Length: 211
Image 1 (cartoon, rainbow, N blue to C red):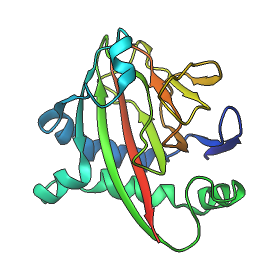
Image 2 (image 1 turned 30 degrees about the vertical axis):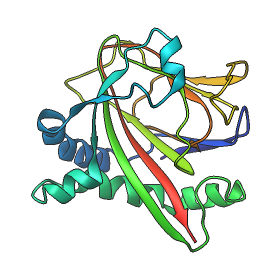
Image 3 (image 1 turned 60 degrees about the vertical axis):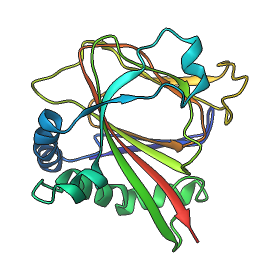
Image 4 (image 1 turned 180 degrees about the vertical axis):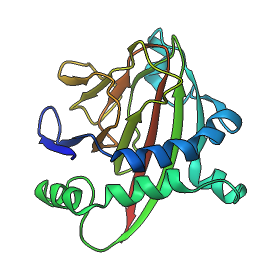
């Protein structure tokens, strides 16, 4: 059973441990395997975030935008998208969203515009302090493949700052890498991934709304 916690420091966010049951997680991983092996590309993030220029962090990771990929390759299994989206809107999580006064996901009717990014970090890679101001909210699902374990690092750091300009990381919370872990946070909140040894995998679900 999932353990859901609403956190208010340093910014309102939700964490979910044991997010997927074992059957759903297995199906999701099986659908991602052919994408991992054949459809991940190096993502050059230089120029997107000013903070990259001042930190000693590898600016590359392997990525795939799943909605676009599956539209171009309709024979690929859609479980990776469908399972994540369906579980994000489970009744227990809907109640958690309502308990934040809809500060994150909105429970009232509106049009949801979303994209999903599959990311692979390898040894020595990480992500500098940055935010994603073009989205309203981000749900990041962190998981492991049985054949590619992480060794150390890959921590998720979330700050309370909503602007990257002149950012100073004074107040933040750290979540060590954990399998089957979901964190939902405002996309504008400045955050970071520490360098990893081994592998780190995540599905990032970026959400915006159109009234």
